[in-house]
Image (cartoon, rainbow over all chains, first blue to last red; front, side):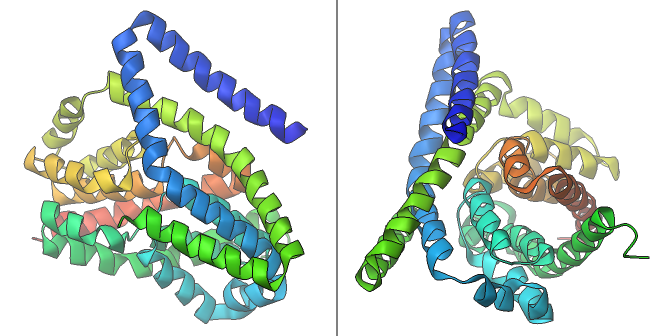
Length: 171
Length: 160
């Protein structure tokens, strides 16, 4: 079980760091423990939900279907979809990354994946919070920049990565 | 009801639907779920411990003093760097960004901080590397940094 071994390594490293801090300063060790607990407590529901959805995508969505929506053949429509829909999705990078890994394996293009991550940074669900702390002008301006940002990000990163991987083809 | 609960209800609803349609496929789906969990959860544990370390050793006031002082274009870059290493939740990003603005940081710096805090993170780096590889991670993080800088300049110039 290679997976299990790797999992164990991460846990041991984390415990070691926490242990050392706690020995030198128990109060700081307590802060570390609280942050870790809060982090899990806040994220655990979304994590479980997203991982269940990942499993379901894996067995129900065929690669052909997905690449029609987010693959290279989807063209502009796919990129536009990937640059808008994620603005309304919550969660954190921890949950978004595994989801996109699954979509990528199923045939989503690099441009779609990159645009998806960027657009997700729009964070529309947190809009009330943003308006409250930074004003509605700032919030509107920031959100309106997200879609072009995501499109440019998708196209540019796909171009760079493809050139990097096949230097002789793109010339 | 919180967002997490809504997600959970949707996920379990889909799972039940899936089980009614095809129990074998659903079993396979759950196997995938447990594999992903085993891959991601330990990394997450390490990430949260590191977040705790920063919380314990770097005070918010110190960060605010760093960011509040600069005014040139460089201040955007500083905002971005702080956003990259600030291991905070998206939900905390905005209240903290408001605090930064009150402490004297300009809107370009605040935008740089917000976008990198959400999109780039030394905390999520191990997971990104593991799932997508070195090239993808390097290109995504560098390009995001550069594009956020450009948007930051616009935010700095525009009067809000």
